[in-house]
Length: 310
Image (cartoon, rainbow, N blue to C red; front, side, top):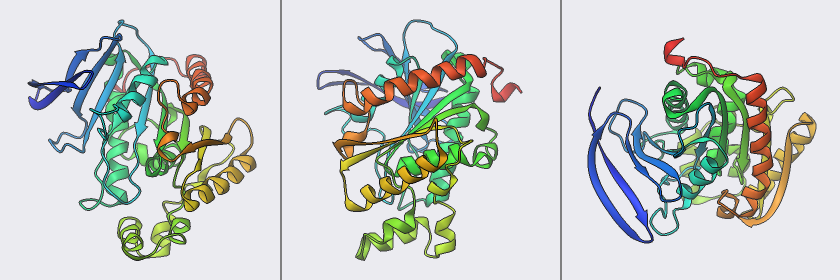
């Protein structure tokens, strides 16, 4: 077991306690509300802080729980899975919400500009999915039962991994385990986004997704949503930028063409308001969808050996 230095952050209001521990799979701390949180878990055999994830688990010894992977945004600019963590616990609250819905939840970090392009970031998230499947049984999870949730630029990543099975197979992960994907205030076609931006933003988008149109088309996820795709829910933000509202409209048309059980809905929220948090509107909408996904896994995807042992 390779010892890795990680940091343990425990919340009590705005107070912060920091401890240094050496663990191979991150650090764990019981949450006062009955959750166990493990932060800074490396998934790619590196010490890169972007190639880490945070785990949110029910602290009750339950087994065979489905897995949930949340992918934050950053369509062409660097963001962080810990954004506002000590002020609002923003994405951490999403992890808590998913854990309380009965999932082994992971909030995933991945490399972004300026150090990495789209292919590297997508590969990172794929490896995080593979890591979670490999370690699912020891975490109380079912390696063959998973949902992906992505917000903003993270929705593009979630869709690409859910709809194109070759991307997960390339890292040894099992794409058949993906029972559903939730796309939240998402970017679904970089070319369509370019019609709404100019100047330095346009240069950054082309630098991240590719300067050539043919190169960018490989990242257009809306055309990949087919009737046989994992069950998809698309939530848009009415109070969003015109470019992303337009992308939601186009994705809604794709959902209609694909038919049931895929669904789309426009919520009266802003861009960041589309991130599910306990008690907010996206969480209300997603709870029934998550219940259904969990039920499908229970009947169609019984627990099986993790990918590492197959």
